[in-house]
Image (spheres, rainbow, N blue to C red):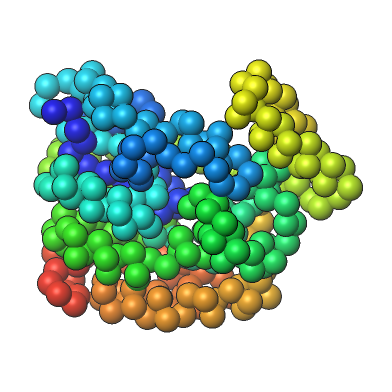
Length: 327
């Protein structure tokens, strides 16, 4: 069977695209050309409803088994096959489906300051004209209502950042030695070191990868009457494109106009962090207990200020229920 040997499993907006592209350069690894196939997120076809743009995104899911395996048919003999779907960490059912089909799979998890991650997530959808709420904190306040209405996981701004809960479940499905956890800040500050650790975890030659491709900086259009009008038109175009495929070109044009001349995304303010940190405090303590690491900087005015965590060789850090492979 042409199934993956490893997964870059999470989290969204935490460098998974850059890691996928970097690992694809290694001669002993084969990464799927479709970076985010999402195969394990559903059993059968994905839903046919959701929030703005969701149905269009669901159409991109590679949910048929034969199509999914075909993504890895071109892998040279002896290479390890991998794919990157950052929602596998968040989706408990996906974790169980992976275990059922690929019990020996290795999973790579990247953790980013949860407020920063949520802000990047919201800015991405706001800049695309999909989120109608132009205030970050107010958009997060809509989360429970959106989840209840069946909007896709990408809209779960704060829930996606409760990594303690997610890892706690993951470690009931996979043994810890099959999971590698590291911080987004480590990837940014010492990419060669992180990539070598990933290669060691996968059992392939180190010293081959030295950097990660630079990620695109998300544009952050300002709230204005023009943005309001263009966003509304874009959401209508997105909805129409689910039945009239030709409308997709209009959607792309509107998105480019919407982002034209916009400044890059800025970090959330301390006031915004103060409003949202209470949503994560308990989970951050849980994450620390699970990994044996200190994530206290995520409670401060600027998250991820602590830089690289756990620079000792893998396997030397102890945590609850056995060894923790994290840094």
